[in-house]
Amino acid sequence: MVACDVGDRDAVAALLAGIPGEHPLTAVVHAAGVLDDAVVQALTPERVDRVARPKLAAALHLHELTRDHKLAAFVLFSAAAGTFGPAGQANYAAANAALDALAQHRRVAGLPAVSMAWGLWAGGGGMTGHLSESDVDRLARGGMRPMPVADGLALFDAALASGAATVVAAHLEPAALRDGSPLVRGLAGEPARRTVPRAAAPRAASRRTPDLATLAPDERTEALLRLVREHAAAVLGHGSAAAVPEAHGFLEVGFDSLTAVEMRNRLAAATGLRLPATLLFDHPTPARLAAHLAAELAETVEAGSPVVTEERVGAGGSASVVPVTPEAAVERSAAGRGVRSALDGASADEVFAFIDRQLGRAAHGDNGGGRGETDVH
Image (tube, rainbow, N blue to C red; front, side, top):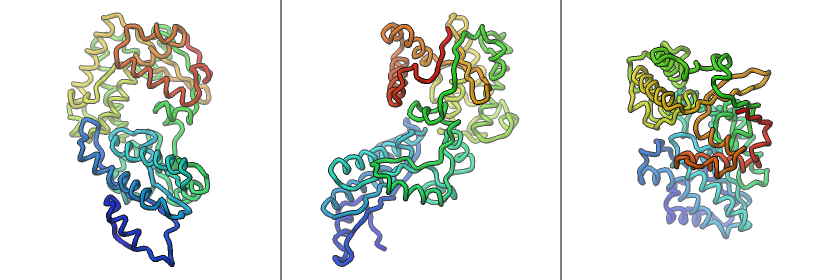
């Protein structure tokens, strides 16, 4: 056992030089890592370097300094963050994506390598020892469930024997992945979809959320307040909206920057509005946030903007109706009218969103018509 700062190239060189010739180095397992989570706006060069040094710089040192060793294995402990890109871990995701690239580079060069992108391990401790129960619940809602140690060790053996340069070793919840990144939606399987104008499906809409566009202003604000409190309770892991008083601040009841982003995403999906990442900080109580959303929806209704819903039919024929965001509407309409006409008059955000979605489909070989979808306009 030798203590070594693997982020220091000279220290790693000295460590390797100290290995006795009668017991030569035969394998490397690089498992070092540091977390410094924050939303992108809060990242600084120092926070990026703090995460990259023990993860990426160390891996590069080990790669360069062992090239002439006849290794049987070169194992990099990457993380699922580099594959799935969770909120608040841009620096960590980048460092781990670079490990995956290094493994590919070594394999092309004829050197042994496998980068294992780990999901969450059960039992706490180590790098995830700081996670609270609500943090673990938040990860589960995103599709990542804790993995028993025995399963993790079995996956380590399987990854080592797989012959692949990169693998993801994690316990995933398929149903939770359905609303996630296009990169992982295919793992869950796509439910059948029908896209219809709101006015054509009022009864179906009531099974999920009220038809906000047709409510009177007072009723709309009241419905939005219920919606905000229900989603806030779900994000914080409470069983009832009563745990989130309408006049209490979001920070006061337990929100942080990461859960605030999750809350924004939920409300954007539920209302069809484009909402900023700073939504909960700009409107810091459920009552003020509901009033803001009501005003935004009122402008949409008064402007006569089309409001579209999507009926998702899941297993067993169960159905729910959810709003379709402007970006999704652009994408759906493109299938029938062509990309150029679909993007005429689109904002920069809508154009980039369209490109991101199309790239996600291309990764699965999906041309928009291979998932059993039927769009009804």
